Image (cartoon, rainbow, N blue to C red; front, top):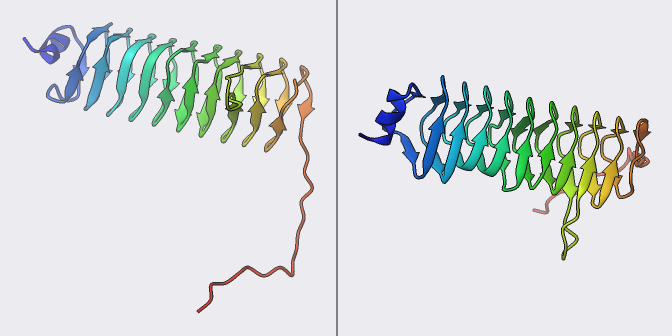
Length: 216
């Protein structure tokens, strides 16, 4: 009996049994659904109610109950909590542990980091070598600058922090509980709990400036 037939017999919903590739051990709970062209390598566990979108690759991953993995997501050597939402086009790299109700959205990469319950990084972010608390919102374009050219350094973001868009966090750095960081900030020193932190820059307008044009 093929692996797809075994999964169907166990009650797993496969969008197309001819388009699934199980290269290791895949354990599924009840009411699991898997869309087309997914690859499972190493040891993968999908708890009850997990939904895997099309064209995903999971390698040595444990996924908690009720979690949805949206299409074109790559996850390896990671643990995902219950009722999380991952992807589409997310990359979850080794050493990552995401708690319950975490959202990691499109074009977000997470490496060797933990997220507390309910934290979100919904778009276009890189979180590496970081400890993220609960209830944190990480804005679009935010990155943890964890590598100085020789060594990796850690970023700590405590509970209930709100990070605006396009923020750079230069590790090692700690953002205190309940702090808010304004959009476009470059943070190289620890941020105290609560309050707002900005790295203000003056806007300059030049109304008489002319855009360069290509020569004929």
